[in-house]
Image (cartoon, rainbow over all chains, first blue to last red; front, side, top):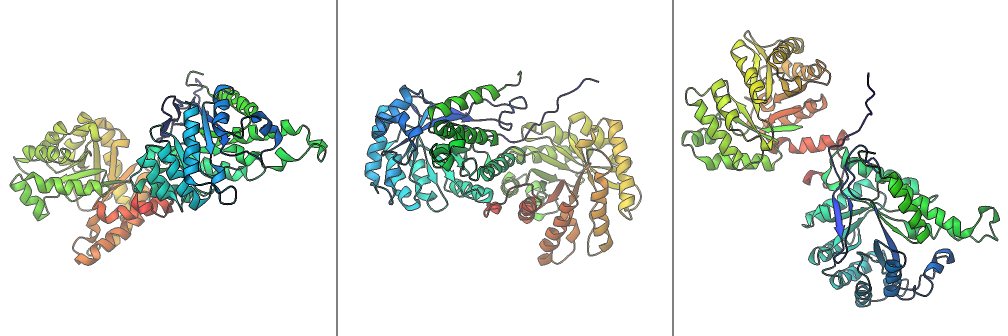
Amino acid sequence: MVFTEPKEAFPGSIYDITFGAERTVTFGGENSLAFHGFEGAAPHHPVIAFEVQDSLPDDWPPAVHDVYAGVSGDPAAWAQFCQNELKAQAIALRLLSTHPDRADRSAADAARTVADVLAAVSVPLIILGSNHVEKDAEVLVAAAEAAKGRKCIIGKAQEKNYRTITAAAMANDHLLIALSELDINLCKQLNILITQMGYARERIIIDPMCSALGYGLDYTWSVMERIRLAALAQNDAVMQQPMLADVGMYVWKTKEAQAPEAELPRWGSLKQRGIAWEVITAGSMLLAGAELLIMRHPEAVASIEQFIGELSVTEAG
Amino acid sequence: MLIIGEKLSIIAKRVREAILHRDRSPIQEIAVNQWRAGAGMIDANIGPAGEEGEALMEWMVTTIQEVVPLPVCLDTTNAGAVEAGLRVHDNTWGRPMINSTSNDPERFPMLELAAQYNALIIGLAVGKGGLPADAEERCALAAEIMGRAMECGVPLEDLYLDPLVLQIATSQDHARHVLNAVKMFQELNEPAMKTVVGLSNISNGCPKHIRPILNKHYFTLLMHEGLAAAIADPHEVAETVKTLDVLQGRIVYAHSYLEM
């Protein structure tokens, strides 16, 4: 008897998302689990966006901040550096200074920053608020208007502010990140609420909330895995969106990425530690099903790109 | 769970009159309402319909499929009418279903039509004699029908076994027999045989206000036993289908699950 390789075929598939205007990238579209291209179609590779902030990232450890020395005070220059020097496929602009506990900059200021960055780069842009529920509702509306015509991804819409942010995404033809906090039922509910506003479910990106290795990565993993199985195996049309892993912000605040070598000599090189932490976290999120990553260190990004290339086998492979 | 919308039956006065006057709009309105409420197929019950059966079934199928992207369940004892319906059926929306064959020789030609037109078919667990007494007799009849289906070249996965729901008001014990039969039918083959019921038969002859209660609760028990399809009013059972999908883990819960 000839051995037949068992293959699992699913009834459901993931929507594909294309964003950007001048230059575009596409992710999602598969009908198999992550890197199971031998079982089904996986037409697009996951996409990595470099994170850029609208103010000096003074809480980034030197290992990653040093890469952006000279540009990190100017978001447009920083974005341009990522595009031209680091060959970024996409950029994620985080409007962190709008947070009331930081500089509390206005929505109008944020809109100007968005316009400056958009003028400086042609790669697709993700526009993120400061994760303050009320302030994001103002900031992202202004940002969405400033970015009209560039088909950006904006977010994150949450249970308490999704109405305004969804309306802004809809009015200005952007894609939308829907964030729920490690809860598959709330994730589904938020997707339903957003679609009930008339926003197309094929234009949502799920953020199930990321976490770093050692700091709850297993929770994120298991929620992502369940979301993906609901999409593929149960063919649940409101769970078939691609998923985002916002990796960098969780990794670079961990003790492992920050504690000096003098204090913890046995932990080895601080720089390598941080990069390794970002690689392992990002790689894990990809294996759990993420199609869009936001990362910080170019060496970590290079490793992950290699990882994606090696694991992306096609039907023939 | 496949819900086959039961509302286009010649027994209903509005449908009967529409058929009599070949008035398409009531037929189409009822079909659309059932589709929107979650029906996956529309039953077209034209009764035995003598000589005009062929023209009538053709008219029903095309009238329904003109407005609803669903397959039709051809519900009549008239083989000529079934064939006429199969000929005009638009399979873009799924394969048609024949309702039904049984262990009565008069119903055997239905299996040949199913084979010829690649249609799904309901096998009703009755024979020439009287009604089956219990679940075991239903199984014996079902096995006969399965054997004949295979002889005719109808794949067993295209056969839906119907244990014959009887009225609770006159045949109370049969409610339990049918539940047992739904479970036992599935064990007659591997992969499990599919099962179907005419749900509202359970409450036939009961006071109008308790009929939906009986139907819904009975449907819950049937789904628990693994029922695959039901000829039913989708408005009446949609909530139950969605709720059991959540309770039995076929779909992820969300507060708005009923709105999906």
